[in-house]
Image (cartoon, rainbow, N blue to C red; front, side, top):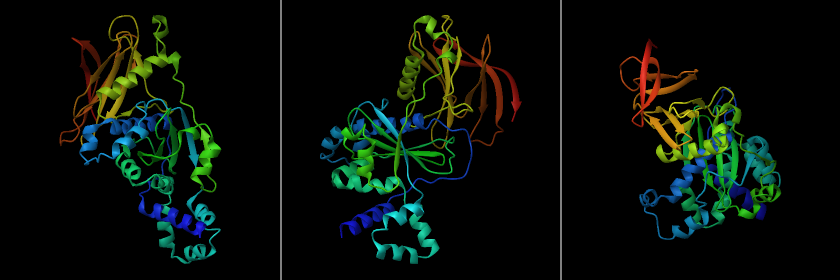
Amino acid sequence: MRTRNRIYTLFLAALLCCTVCSALGETAAPDYYGIGLEVTRLMGEIVDSEDYLSLFAMPESFSKVRERVNTHDYDRPAAVYAIRLEDPETLVEKLLREEPEALEKYRRLSPALRELILSRLSLPALCARINAAAGAEYMSFFTLANAFIRDDRLTAEETGYYLYFFEKGAPILVSFGYHSASGQFLDIPGEYRDNPAEIQSLLALPGLELDPVAAAEPAAGSLGNLADFGIDPEEALRKMSEFIGERLPAGGIPAYDASGSRLYEVFDITGDGCTDLFTNVTWGSGMVRTDLIVYDPVQEELYVLDGYNYDYLIDHAEENRIVIVKEGPHGYNDPVVRTSGTVELEKRQLIFIADSEEPS
């Protein structure tokens, strides 16, 4: 009876939860670790925001859940695991192996109904029972704190999963699908963080494997002369990322180069002799735009060039200037025009200076 109840619980959870879709497509591997952090940061903002939670009539009982869940530091995972799950067909066969009657019923289903079950058999759905065991308050709060972002660089054929543990609070499962990443809290004890075998035992899914994942080291040699000014390149990138998170709306997507690494360019726009860091961040819904971001690592200041319905895209850096392409307008009937130029810093504001126009 215990086996039957467990199987039915798994299936019920899978059928009631939405799976993250996947689709065909090949591209350079994106920074899954970094994209997952965008999701965890957004979930951290949700948990910290009284205003956001109050919009959903947050009951007083959520206070203890928030206190247990919150790390107040979703930028720094203590451990991250990539999770591999067996293909749905094999997983169903293994889950039902000890329940011959249920397995026979499954095999008698029409191909359409079997496909429907398989399409919903995602890891988040199968893990829903873990949160359900924590109680109604936890399950309700975890559902409220779910987060979703878009990233057009995610084009993998299969859905992938990363599990983020922090120094305290609840871990977060991030699912990577086609052009999207989503996150949900899991009620897994923090002491399991450094023991993959215990995590596997708790998840109790046949064929599930966990592989430790480390954050990609920044390419210090590509960040100009920061070291000559006593500035640690890795620390500069961390501070830049924090400032971007504070200045731009949640869910902004950083730019990546062809190798799947975070895109940075260097050029001394402030005139202090130290190279400044340039990157692009895409954000918004409906009217999506790509902003130019400049970080002055000496003064620790961030500058943003936002053209509303125009994009400001980094092209390359030359010895005497940084080349930027202004593209737009977007969202109107006017033809899109690409304008090549550069940017200057005037009175603490980024100013675009055009030097050519090419109708797209």
